Image (cartoon, rainbow, N blue to C red; front, side, top):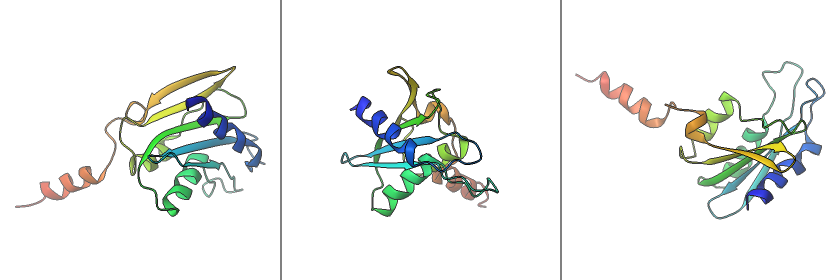
Length: 138
C-alpha cells in the first residue's frame, strides 16, 4: 500500500498551480477506512494565501467527514524527499496521532519514512491548551 500511496501523491503533481516557485507538490492522505484524498499546492502571488498539498488533502478529507488517518505520502516534482512544512505538520497534528507514517518520495523508488511525532515533537495540541488553562486556576 506504501507504493500506491506515493503513486497517488505523484499523480497530483500535474494538477499543481505553481507559476511562482515552479515546485509542484502532491500529497495523498489515507483515512482509517482506506479512502485516499489527494491534494496539490496552489500558489498565489502574495505567497501567504498559497495552499499546500498536505492541507488541501486534509481539508478535502475533513470536509467529507473523516477524522481518522493512517498514512500520508508527499512527492515533489524534484523527487527530493520533501517533507511537510511546519504549518502543515501542525495542521496534521490536529487530526493525527504522533505515529502517523509520513512517506516522502526521494525518487528512483526510494521513500523516506518518518512519523509525525518525529517531524513535529512537542506539538501544540488541545491538551496543551487545556494544561495552560488549568495552570491559571486558583
